[in-house]
Length: 435
Length: 180
Image (cartoon, rainbow over all chains, first blue to last red; front, side):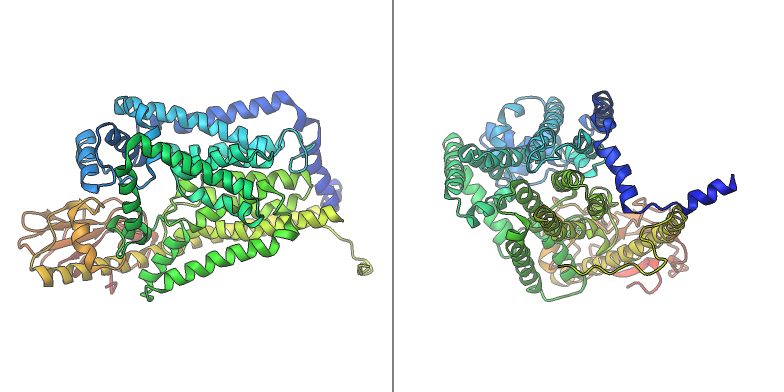
């Protein structure tokens, strides 16, 4: 017995041996077993529903704000006037419920008008159902955009069902997604539009791509960054399609609700983000311990270390410029110009870092970059290269809330590291492909 | 052409099962040490940041009192964005946080009629400013006028981060010694 143990201890598990085991998991018959895959998917879905079903009754923060905004449009209330908005909120929910100001563009409130015809309990239940369906739609679109089933240039190729199953595991192990559904947030709709943009951009259908990016931008402004690759590559057809769709949709919204609504939105946005001083709400929220954006980190550092206020904007601009210089410098070597999923993965992370307010639920979008890296690591059999991303992904998805500065910013710092490492990962791939 | 160094005599690439077991054991020990250390450092940083915030609120209260002669309007409990106190104190603060660094709302009581922690607020300029610490649950601690320093404590165990931090009219009556 001891002899066998000694022999086992001396056995070498060098690279090829470990790789052979992982190859067997990734490419062997087990990875093609449809019954096993179906069971894993079913279990993940059941666990996910069990994790979130109670939120139908425990709604939180954001959905009351959307409900009040949509109700406000039904009743012709000036929803960007804070006092009028709060009065309506108090009438609908009572004064004990904090209703956050509505700082989104008008189209979100407009598309929620039909839902706002429902009593609030029914509205929250329907919103929960919609979010579940949107979650599944996002997974489907990620499978499509990353070509996880069909293989192909960006796909997992012969890797069987493993990259698809990874997405479903991410569904269960994803705290930001859980919070998104708890808050009744609208991130998943925006992510679905972004993924539709990537899907159509990949297939060269610029009008459809432009339409979906415009829809995403008119709900939350941050996806506007995704048009940058088209600008740099001088793909004017894509840029024109996006600009045209944005203008057309904004005009339709204007025609539906009148110019006063848009004037109110523009005034509030200017005051919120550019006003001096910014509104109390934004000034406080910007430096909140829970604001996981670069601006949040800088606002916290400035106030805690009593730095000159001008430091924060200067560092912010430098950091943003640095990120784009990194992308431009590595674009050719990483194949960034032609790899639309990679562009999407990088820019989705960039939106998290650069948006003025990034709450933990916004980090839901990290599912896409993680799935991107996993699929490619498996396809190219570079398993070890996935490990740093797995660690960063775990921090982003599961780092505990709270903790003093800078520990409260662990998710942001992990996102920054993810952003910096992704071009290196892509570069290794193109070197391997050339070799 | 790439230069590839030949392996030294007797040297073989890769790792044995025994080596892997040792590595995993060392990693497990390091993780076991790092997790409590990380928790402790996070809590220390949270306390430091929270005390910095409380200092900011306290200075804003002082400036507001100097300007207006009375504390801001009369909130009872959590500082929330839609309460008048935030708008009233905002001009006296550069940045402000309504949450402490464990994620719980700061609590404020102002003006006559409030009795909290055994402290009775009697004048219009009286105020209490509180962080409920790591757990977010208010302590049952009561202020003893005969021993005004009895609420101050040394940080000796992780449980001390659960204790409240209480400022009464600009003076620390419950919290780590020498914190303000």
